[in-house]
Image (cartoon, rainbow, N blue to C red; front, side, top):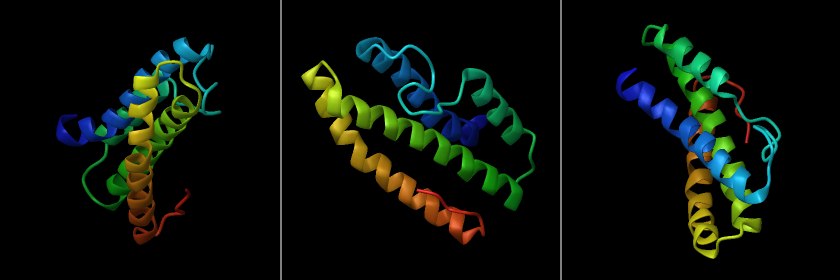
Length: 122
């Protein structure tokens, strides 16, 4: 919970919220259809529960970065997809504007993961 829970939940919630909006606009029928592997609400709740059950320290930091990367990758897939094929021109512009920032965050999170000794992806 608290600030850290919000930081982890935010990219996951944005990805989930955008999935519903983009899915409806693009005709995507279910979670994971747009990105090939989006976390379900149950999986997101499990991630947040796992984080809230950990004490601060290296194990928590690694789980936090992993969850953040997952959320950002989902957000990138959704925004990228909508930027390319969305119906609403104003929303396409917003999605196109979000993509570079999301990529920057993924790069930063991947660097953090490498520095912690994890296997950075993306």
